[in-house]
Amino acid sequence: MAPEAPTVELAHGAAMPRLGLGTWPMDDAEAERVIAEAIGLGYRLVDTAENYRNERGVGLGLKASGAAREDLFVTTKFNREWHGVDLAAEACQRSLDRLGLDYIDLLLIHWPNPQHGHYEEAFQGLVRLLEAGRVKAIGTSNFKPAHLDRIIEATGVIPDVNQIQLSPLTTRLDARAYHKERGIVTQSWSPIGGSGGEVREDPVVVGLAEKYGKTPVQVVLRWHLDLGLAVVPKSSNLKRLEQNLDVFDFSLDPDDVMALSALDQGEASAADSDAFGH
Image (cartoon, rainbow, N blue to C red; front, side, top):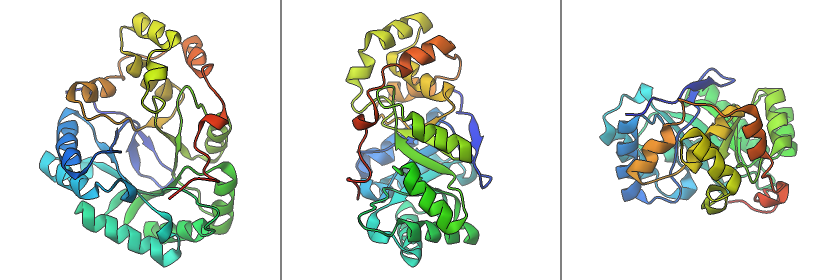
């Protein structure tokens, strides 16, 4: 079994593993199998969403693992139809029912959907859920600094986490700086850059993999960690699951972190959350 990921303390006190398992696009059956296997390997954070349509499978996998609930960290997210104070509470309860849990560790607004115009109310709903103890931490996904400014101004509450598309191809320097200044943890989705072929085969990444005796994916995951980020890579392959968790016995030299960051293709390479969402 690989060592468990170290944790980061979130703004509202929860301890979140810095590396976990992403579950998009697993279906229920695959999620149940993979999550039980992953927890057996040492994973403690599982990331799902209403939109993934696999929360039931995730819940079954958590149960099948035999792990104590307090040893696990479960993240889920809800869609724009629940962007409202009371609607957010309903979204939370629906996710709890599908997961078979009595609390969620981290509940996120999946996309801001600014054209819909209600993400501030959705975050107000998250604050109420946090105060009621139905969730341990609250946050956002795919929010830009301008979106975060509005919810912080509306509620006076800093989100624990903003989960954003981030990889060596999409380094999101401005967002990361904004988060760091306010104590928001940056969590990376699509951390290898989509299907990852372009990153895995890049000569810089391949060269660093040879230097450190690791796989290209392990080198990229270590880049995230060395930048102080949290990360949720997805795999359903047992060997790769184990490899993805086996990244805590080395660090990249600062020059190598910079070399990977230099692969950045700019903000345009990320999905535009002012134009896209669900």
